[in-house]
Image 1 (cartoon, helix red, strand yellow):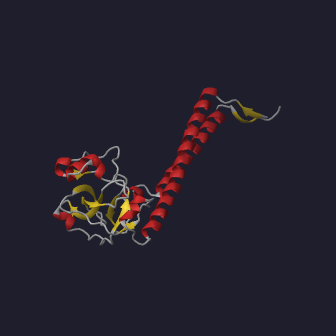
Image 2 (tube, helix red, strand yellow; image 1 turned 120 degrees about the vertical axis):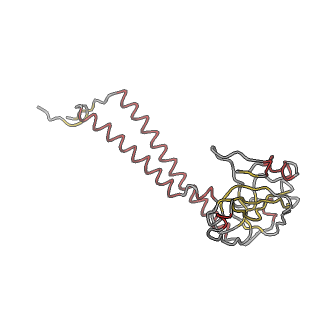
Image 3 (spheres, helix red, strand yellow; image 1 turned 60 degrees about the vertical axis):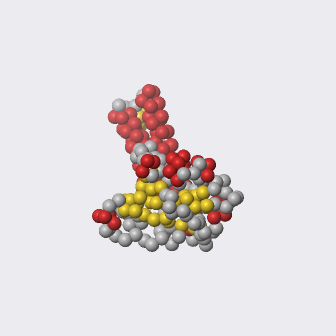
Length: 232
């Protein structure tokens, strides 16, 4: 004889928690696949021959090498980042003209990297850039540091403030893309949480779901509400 007399409130709460854990596991699994696809797309675009600046007029690909940009290095802004060797410092961006087909007159082009101090400059040498490539501008995170436009220093893309520092109107500056030094690395937003980590997160949520089922079952078995009873 099968005994099945679950506690109703506890079972309802368990089912709700189980649904949440499974949804989180599924979400992280989807994120893992999405990130893997983006990395593959980036690698394919990066291996293509350099395109002209007209690439921003069509449907550009993240990582697409671009040739022909002529930045005005007398005007620039600094964006906090790291070199290919991992040293902290400022990525220096200057405006360059775009063809008439683009949605703006200017695009930011990364021209060099400035270490924060002499100590960081003396660290491992960075990989020599092989040109520039298209990337989506760095967006501000939830806990991003505040920008300092008065010093021309930024921690994320800030179209209005950067345009003011450069002495151009906001509409003159392209907001969808910028050109970064191509040192062969994937962009930070792709490597900060690699696909493997999403997979580990998904596994964690699924294991928690299994543990929740085990605890629920063990509680009901010890209370005599779940199991088998011999017929007398």
